[in-house]
Image (cartoon, rainbow, N blue to C red; front, top):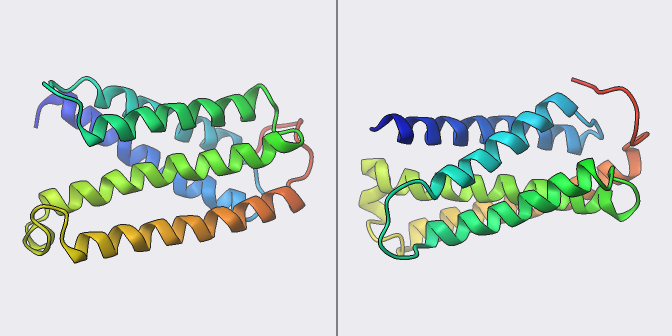
Amino acid sequence: MTPFTIIHVLLSLVGIITGLVVLAGLLTAKRLDSWTVVFLASTLATSLTGFGFPFERLLPSHIVGAISIVVLAAAIYSRYVGLMAGRWRSIYVVTAVVALYLNVFVLVVQLFLKVPALNALAPTQSEPPFTIAQTIVLLIFAALGVAAVKRFRMNGGPVRGAASA
């Protein structure tokens, strides 16, 4: 692996790990401001560095990366400009969960590409094991996203104030 690839992978893993912490915070109505900064920054950096790999044509990974950047822009705006006031709170939660989902979606793709046992089950990623895995991930994130919107809205507490770690 090249140093650039290692940085990209590490950013992605940091984004996923911190994103899961932030998601847990959303589900328990905790802002977790410090974790959120790291999650949003590392996930944005992951998407941006994804465009730094050589390519000759537009690939599905580029489309996912572009969607992720747009979603992250909405999350960052709703969190730091909209201050999660009114509808911005729900928009933030939805876009943060979608950004995390997209990162996990790519993780599943990479696992099926790189882990021999998974690759043997779905070498072209059009086989049922891959589709089933991605469908399960999507359903889990959809359910968690709905729960996070409900819980973070009802119990979110003050929008402005001291940061919580």
